[in-house]
Length: 553
Image 1 (cartoon, rainbow, N blue to C red):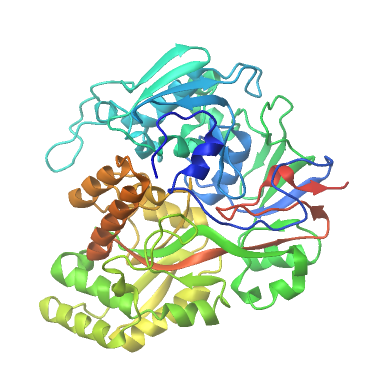
Image 2 (image 1 turned 90 degrees about the vertical axis):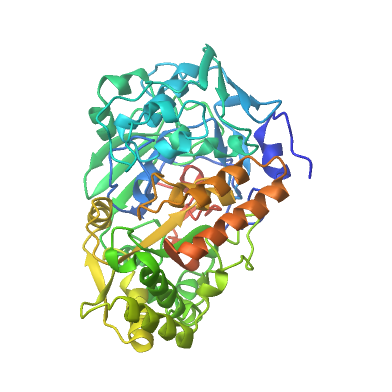
């Protein structure tokens, strides 16, 4: 397929490119246009406490993203099937896939009444990219020219030198007028516009730069909702933004994101009519929820993958013996049995690092045989590793949060590891999701740890670079491979989508050779809603489109 060299109206690009989502069903009593009779009821949704302040370039976990994606509007947005639509952007154009001219629509304002301008985007992107600001999503600006100059200088060992970055702003960003700016990339990248609906690329008002800390508690956005109140560890109240100028027209009186510390409680509240939407069905209900909820249940493929990550600082997983242990653990896991018995078929055993709902996915990536259940080979590899460096008496720990239903699969995973490898294995439980994330980010995990990835935009690259690229914001293992980074850069720069897919698969082979993470299974979106709401649709990324849900008083 010949790639488009000039892009006007991103919906056409999303349908033409082979790097976008090709199929994902909706569920519920309406379509995904947001059209219909508006209602005034407040929709309650099961959620949790965000790990970080609500700053778009800092938020990289699901509880916070439900806020940013509804309080902010980007240049584009994704509909339920992952197709890209212009939002703040009037057009995104390029003749060479390297220099992109972005023109904004007139009439957009933030909820405080200040205008959304080209400067609003450029300032926000520069803030996100600037190394000393330590933003989780800084990695997403790496393709823009001048990224290296705004990073904190390091020595040959990768340690900060204490010097300031060479520049404070990306050289590849230029404001032309209030409604136009130009982005120059370091190399041509044909799918660059596809990424621009992700939160890293949202605009920020001038007030943010006066007091980022205060802003994170009470963000001012330009999206369908405003954050009216945040009672930490309990409730986040979103209410319609009367100044919102886009197509995601709110059809309800607001959304309450209710923080739960366990999914069974949220599901029981749903059954009792005390909660309107759950986005994760607990394992205890996998076998019954579709019968209990009927047409109000959703069980559909989504762009989500679960892995067990291997922290590079753990000495037991370093070197030749460490790699053998990674391989042995992977082959000791009976993914087929766990997905059938624990998840009642709502998960699919992983065969790569991406997702079957993303175009370009393949179950035949070279090296993927390490994901096959093979207890004899697993034991052989473990014994070979023991001959090099004994494991010792301590258990293998698998860490995760206890406020979601992860013990249900960690226990049988540990049982298989015990039976196959002859070592003890235990669930290392952290009470809440944010406590688990803090321990992970502070390198306090003492074994392996669960990693779940929900795609930011519908492309293979999003499952690879942000997680496994050197220094990437979601590279929580500390993995670094120049070979992988170079292959990913080559794939990102491919002008032909089919060529890009083959290069991404080669990058995956490098990951299979190193196993910085051990893929487990692909998630379905499993959720449901009460009889009190209508027009509920779960999108390609497993999140419900909250703005179109209707509810009577």
